[in-house]
Every structure is written in structure tokens, then in C-alpha cells.
Image 1 (cartoon, rainbow, N blue to C red):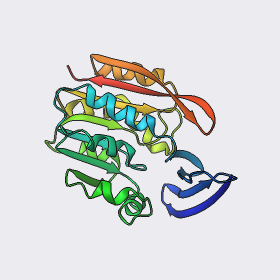
Image 2: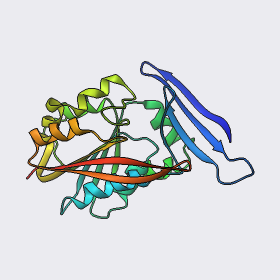
Image 3: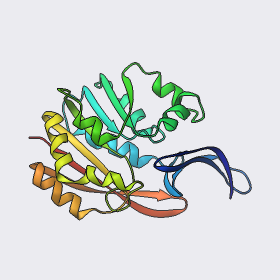
Length: 225
């Protein structure tokens, strides 16, 4: 396997690297995103991003306004925009360079996604963006900002899995609204915390195939009933 760096940026949160994986003997090239040396996601396997979006969109009857925490490589946003019921999507991303890579075509499918008039990108910390959202309400909130509460890319993200922030999200949801959180590993403490805030909470095991090995991701869905 050959690795070729496409782009790199260092911010106050550390290093963000976009690189290509080129299989020996040919085969499709895969774009991979890493933060501080930790694998975040790639273009080869994005079924979990689709599952995250589907779980949230299926949880409500009329998901017109959606908030996505974490832009990543855009696959969650792509899935959300593919639902004709969605009228507006706010995407909150803390790394401005990641948004730039989407807009300038460094991430090839980025321009198409961000050109959709329903999508608005906010460069900010998700906790601050939700707290300062004023009177804004959403039908669906999706959180995919790192690898879950026990595999943090940035230590500051710990707060979004704790009760005060989750109560803020609850307040931003309209009646019957849904929150779905993605995690790379099972998170029993998150499940317990969600149950202290929401009356309807579900833990889902999602099987994936990652670079020739089987793995599991986890989705935590909560509804404001």
C-alpha cells in the first residue's frame, strides 16, 4: 500500500492530514482523513455515515430542519440532502481548512455538496454553536464530531457527550425531534446519560468492513417525546 499526502494543516487543535491510499497492483484510490495521527474516516467505507443519517431521518415524520455536527468528508451531509423532505441543513465544523478543502475541490465531491442551497456551513465549535443558537429549533440533530466519547480526537469534545450539552440539544429539538450520536465503540456511559435527558433512547450496533477487517460502530438515537 502506498500513501500519498494530498493536503496538511496545523491548527491550535493539532494536525489535520488528507492523504490517498493507493493499493499495490492497482485498484481504486481511497481518500483518507486523519487528525493528530488518528484515523477519522475515508472514502472507501462510509456506510456508517449513511446509517447515522438514516437513523435520524427515519425517527421523525417531517425532518425539515437538520443540524449536523461535523462535516468530515461530507457523507453524512450527502445522505441528509438526499432526503427530499429536508429543507435546511446547518453543518457545524470546527476546522475551517476542512471546509476549504471541500469548497476548492481538494475533496472532489465537496463542491457539489456545498453548492446545494439547502446547506449552510458554520465554522465553529459544535457545543458553542448549539448553545448560542438563539431561538433556532431543529427536527433532527446528528453528532459525528470525532470517534465517540471514549476515543476522542480532541479532549474538548468530551463535553458534548455529557448531560449539560445534551440538555441543550434537547431544548433545540422540536416536539418529536431526534438526536443521533455516532461512536466508534460501545458507550454505556453515554447511553446512561442520554436516558437521564431523553425518555426514548436506543442503542444500535452497526457492522462495518474496514480495510479487510470486520468491525462494529454504534449509533445512539434519542427522541424528544
